[in-house]
Image (tube, rainbow, N blue to C red; front, top):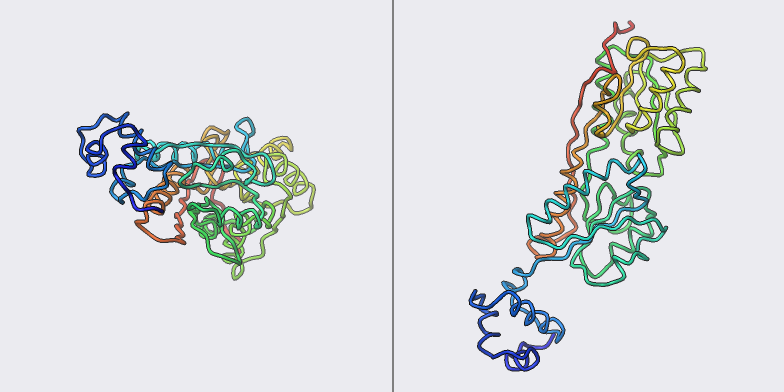
Length: 335
């Protein structure tokens, strides 16, 4: 960038050199309208601003969520994530733009194409690794929620501890006396479900052999169909661990349709703690992921990267919590 010349800026902006000097020195005896106008002129002229001035400018955050559709139940997880990100951005007086992305390539989004962002938050499943790597190489910092790469360059990310959550869920059912446990998992090509089932397998590996069913989807219908198939088998489990709340809801529907009671006949446990979980009948025992916290921390991390207060890549992992409700019960453990 060219070295800043006050007279050039003043001439272009149509103000006095004294006004430009006051802005550069951070003085408050300039109207906000004039200050914004002069700063925009500086930006158009490609001048390097002093760091204290750059920090006074509100950053422009973008948030893109792949496959998000606010009318579908599967996207309910991200309602709270978006709320957390938006509130955090507002507290930082930042411009916050959110875009649901329906196309396969997030880079085709108008949000990214317009080129005025200071940083980007990316969430949603699934996102191909190639797209993740392309987004990670943009000119501005990018923070991913719940997404990392098993290979290639490291990312800036905020994610729940899905492996730890899997262990917690498995331990809870085991300590509740259950030994005949069926686990319903989503597609393991998605790292969320790959991590959750890893935690489950790690816990059960030295204790028992759990029946694990990998589904091609993780919605209510997938849980319903999987549970119907389980109930058609000779040996009925005493507990079902669904690694998404929506699969757990589908499993509950199949159990009730079969004339069985929850949790008297079969305990059911989910994963995520969506808002609907506590109003089900019975309310769902689940692993709580701090959804608003994910959004809030993503904005905090992105802001620090933009302001160069920290250097990436940075990974932040949030611990999950166990939420015990009435969909599970303790039984006498088999010898």
